[in-house]
Figure 1: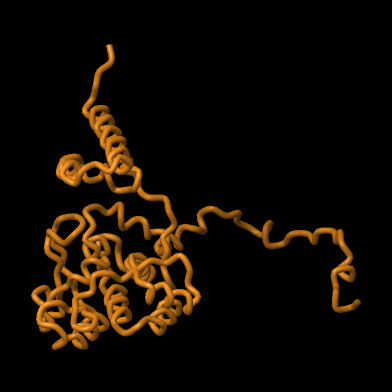
Figure 2: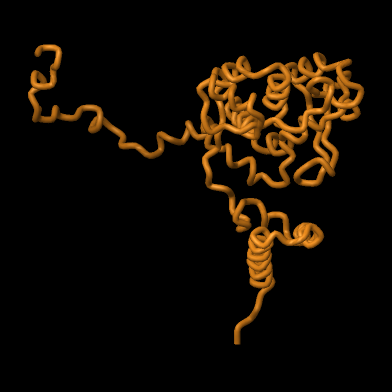
Length: 258
């Protein structure tokens, strides 16, 4: 007799959910039904939907991030309103939606602090956003431009960042396959490369688990340097190897002699 475990029930439920959502997308079901599906989805454990396949496994796609030189090149090509938001994203790691929807009610310049409300956060919990000098300078330049929203264009809130201006700037900067969201990956990568501990990065980014922060662990291996010498051959054997016979006359490879 087969024993049905809770894990088996959860797996069946997840597979059924994924199959139904795929069918709903193709069949173009009414919005009311789609809303019901979205309402049901959070009842399953959050880790079930951490990747695009719903397997709960850590994504294996390579992290796309810029070097500081590439970032400066891109910023120079962006129009002013996008440049300010991109600088702020690089300084804080906030998602595009949290940048575009940021209001002055969420900012305290006197304390160098901003925050994201739970209903605005992907993990549905409030996020404190400490402001470094670069982020604070961006906000200071926006003061007085709009009574409610921090970032605007022609006195109106900005709703979209992936515009033609963004992609044209990427082209001029010689940067390919890069999204605005990858500024968040760049922010996290710079943090790890500069020595920020993963537990601190997790808190800054607003991730529920350390697993998301560990995606960047390979970018900081300094703490492993003390151990790499444990796997080597000691003595003089590898330092004094006999010269291998020369199989190809070097003169035949010297194209300058011809």
